[in-house]
Length: 144
Image 1 (spheres, rainbow, N blue to C red):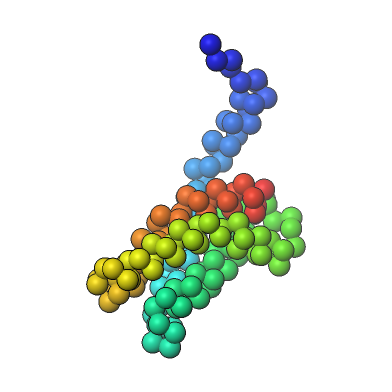
Image 2 (spheres, rainbow, N blue to C red):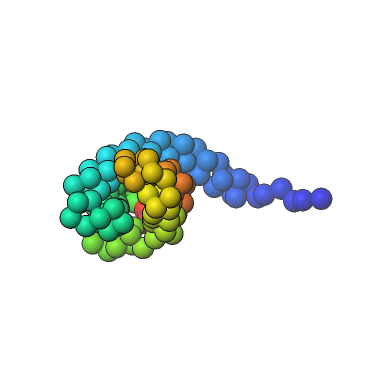
């Protein structure tokens, strides 16, 4: 028979469960802004750098923009760290999400003709698959 969680643990779990939907919706809205930035940078840089390097550069720009919006809006209670330290932690904490994003992005443009012609599709696929990883890294590591 499994023991029930203590009252303190149950309260903590309940608080997290209430906070997640609200934060997740905000995180998604901020992610949409990041998506637009990401696509804009890919299209702006693809002729000069090629799609692979443009995708990597675009991610850094989009991650920086989303960090700032998440700091100011999504997780505004978690802004105790100095800005530079928190930005670097955000990039580090979301490195696994970046790996997922970039693997999907690169495979998509390498193997799917539509994605090579319209890299916004590859950006969307990579962003969608890395969303949850980045959310939980941000919530539990960067903005706690």
